[in-house]
Length: 319
Length: 287
Image (cartoon, rainbow over all chains, first blue to last red; front, side, top):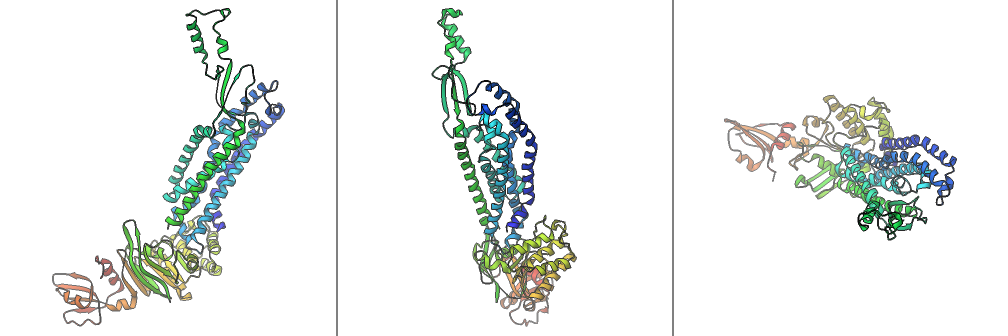
């Protein structure tokens, strides 16, 4: 039966493999280039600790050079969803073309057929996702060491979440397809729903997995290490962390002096002192694995429920 | 031995009964034609027998087992060719046979390859490129190489041209002659079935209208013609299946209980096709 499962999803497996290979082939040159610049410019020394002398400029120029490339690769976040719905296709195609009746009237039980089909699809999807993760983690390496992995571009394609995304898209495709039995509309709807949910999690939900940290520090001190954190907001403030908009501060100062701009020597409008602090709200870099765990469990759990539903529906409600 | 037994079998889809109160017994070695218009419940009955659907009421037993709950005991002994003989269109002929070999314990690989060779098919041909008749033959090969005791064929020739139709039915007859297997074959084309089948089940409006050996059924029915009259007197003794009237003449098709002795009527033999049409034309359900 495993032979049949693999054979019926051969085309989809090849497409998924080609997709992964294409990404790897397209990005390997830039990955190698980035790595060589990283080592050549001695950025490794800047990665761990807070900015040593000259590091800020180096890091700045390096990230300027490569960040746009990474951002241009934002569409890669769609890859797990594509692979997932792609591998849902073989099972839905069987229901659409009614070849499941051919399989179910051989000597194997329906349960075995369903289990084998879905397990093979899930395993293939997971392997493709892991391959993507391994490659993109390598590619992001230098940027990650400087900027951390909590920004969407890295977070989505590293760690374990992409396996969850892929299985979730697979489950969504299978569940909708099992009921609908039309491969094209089912997979289009599944993919659209997948994208919508991902956008929601990326832009709204993820930063709420754990309350962000807040810090206010004087301009003269070095604040928390934000290089590799995900900074939600950062602004000049007073020492209570209240946002100082410099323009308003100026107005307040003007009002206070009755519309006459005082010479600094008058000394009562301490405009400069008002904003001598920085306030930041952020998720620290150390929360990467916590967030990965939460999000993987979320998508992976939903994937399990959806795949189980599809299996039940095909087993019980299909003939 | 009873190969297929249905008792009070019924299947409802939503509010509509596709099959109702079906009680049947098919003996080993019989070749049964399941006849009825589209939507009469033929496919439903065959799918219930193959364990593809769950009955709403009643029971169906194949070789003494429940085809759904005891699929492991039933499936290896049942060959099934679904309507429009679905096959994996991307598979080659060889891969299709490989599928049969992998999924069936009693698979007869020699028989499968012999049949494919006799059909003139190359093992490397893609199934999707074959003609409709060839695809039907490949589907039949898959069913026959299981060495089934019961072969279920759902409208196997409906989509075929007359030549392919004859060749397909010829293949079925050869297989029956070789193995003595029990066959149930559904169709709405009566002429094809008469040469192949020895038993008949007429399904109409989700119910069994008539069932039995074809010889006995043909022998029991008579066509009566006579001057225009009310058939009530005949109906008291015999079952009037259909009646038609012209201004001067009345024609009755009856299922005779014993001999028909009545000087009023002229008796004729009837053909199977007339019997089938008469039963399919009836709108009321027999008592």
